Length: 313
Image (cartoon, rainbow, N blue to C red; front, side, top):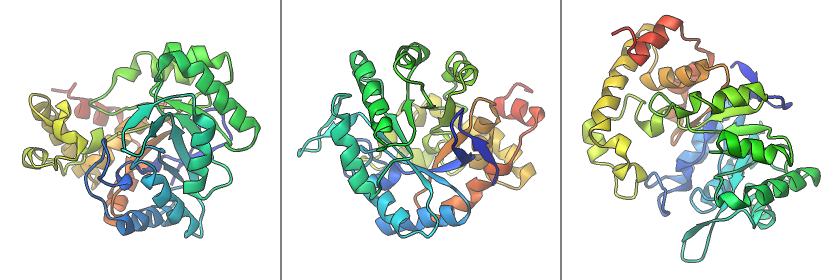
């Protein structure tokens, strides 16, 4: 697979990375429903076997369970991928989630234990919440890097003003924003800023949290489990659902020409933006991996982009 340099860092990533949100399982507030751990580990191994060289998770995914599964999968793999995780969301014994940027040293130690690592390749602030503590949080990440507990530091979901604010403390190496055909707000300011300052961008949810895979139908959206957070998300309910399914129809037409899937085309669309270095794709079973990896080497034409976006109609 093609490799992209992640911003100005020394990391070279496959254009697609393994997203481990769903492998956290179903027993927490932002789950994707039930998940089989053996299937998760098999999916991670299969992705690594096919060349994927990085995994992105977070402490809060499954309230630590995703990191544990990633740790087990990486330890039992002969090829060791880069491992990225995030901090800033903690929980108590009642499984209640709280956002804080003042407990990062404890968080990183717990993540290292669950991941069975001596150092984390990329450590990221998950959300800029509470906003008044982002400087303290970022200073803590810079200190962790100095001490060798993490190799690179970045943030997720920050806006341009917040990026400028923390840059005064330490350089921002990476940014992880949401980016897809149905979530394009970052094109206006955030992506140009990242490119200008050589901040590496790894986009999450390039398939719109499953909406753009081609497997999502009106019936499937209506029948999502109650513990799947998408059940009540506006993108999976009308009127947005109808518009998004029309978009999937256009993706399907382009996918047919390339003998691939609508989801792969959606990922390739996100990677077409020159500011985007990599895309995070969530896999729950080994058979989901192969169809999407075609996007890693697929370069869409301007005509393809126009058709997908509907500007030719």
